[in-house]
Length: 167
Image (cartoon, rainbow, N blue to C red; front, top):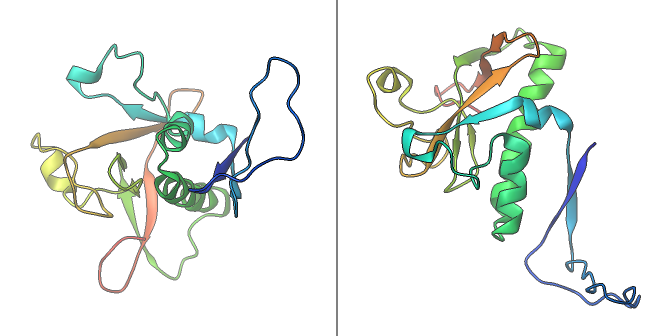
């Protein structure tokens, strides 16, 4: 089931009275929505050693979008949705054959919402924390593992721009 996420900073009033005992729902003024499909749940967030067993840790990117909305970071939720939607589009349609693609294991950044190949892919194999491919931070990142139902791991694929940066 798809989840519609409302994105906005300010709340507007709803003229419809709530059902007895229910709290009124306020639609944010100027809200937009994004669709978060069930495939977001197939993109697992890999916990660091000290995060294992934490019941509040988001297990997949669907939960990550919900978390960003819950903590009032709609810009991060939107960035994450945009990045994952682009990745899923590449998987559906295949690379365009015109550009150069980067492939590997993605990381999610809790500071900015970016999901994609880290800036330090070589350093990760040496034990370094993933450095966000968006903002460059390594303070709050986790690796992302994309697994098919049969257990096959799929690499993250993203287009590289002419200057070598990944989109």
